[in-house]
Length: 476
Image (cartoon, rainbow, N blue to C red):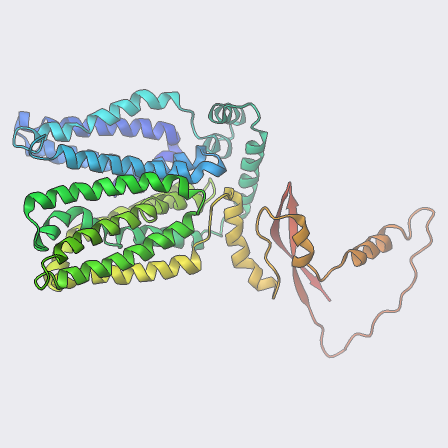
């Protein structure tokens, strides 16, 4: 939790790449303290090492999704964003396998098991310097255009990066005008993190072995099924990578939450009737595996990814820090609180998670926008449109980003082309040199009792994108 809330400040202070490099030093320190605690016979070394490893995990969960979303091209942002969750799942499966009693899960082997964290930290410390810094951080946050262009050329393997540079400048101009449009995306980011942790996934990951034993399965078989939970999550995370930029974040999140809702009901039923039907013990295993499958498809990676996508460059680090704090603190509460829930609710212990899943599915369906194949500026424009358009325009078609200009007349059909040409002709071709003065047209009668005012929204044309600018005009 401490590392998560501090991750945004680190990202702003020294950049995404430098922050990750410093974070590896923290991981090496933590792994060294933990693995040497038995040698020095010091419980303090073990506790301090765990503190530094926790700090490292919090900073990683804030910086890695942010860095990946900023360096990825728009069409691959979903796939690369899922790679962060893939790394987490690989670490989970490896820890489950290495922790078996036949490998390192012994009295003599546990210091080496804790010291394994040293290996990925050293690898990243050696390999990350070869990667460029985030071009968005260089250009928008620091104004270093030359370095940003060079970083983009390395990332795109091409010298034609002017379109990306211009898109970043457009985002920079837009964020200077949108300082007050952060409440809605921040609420969405927080609820998305809650949908991950309050779904019940930590109850499965932390207590699946005891859950399977309570269902009537032997302890040794339950441990194998627990490793199967991690393996299934790894496979489905790999499957979700190509789907992320095809089906979209919102769609996959809805499918994931819906599937977890159904599987949690089956899991509760199997726990209730396990004494009546012996085969229901394996139904509980299948339900838990299905629960993990749907989690890996949606809520596993999407909350981290979409949090970084909902915000422009300026507020992104702070927003990611808040979302990371919410995620880790909620996971902490669920991890500590589930044994109490198990004692209080017994076989109905998963029903509170079922209720939360229904709430989060409804929220996602009504409030979460689709961010697939949209630039950061276009995503921000969605919230500007949602907050302003209903105040100024009634029964007006909204213009989605990247649509052809043929839809312009359907969106703003109150002012025809002929009237625009007459307006231009009247003001520009009368009264100038060599032109007669404009004719005196009779004014329509104006009611003395009241005046009517009409507010319209004006669109702004930027490059090939038509975006609502919400400039208000008053007409008498």
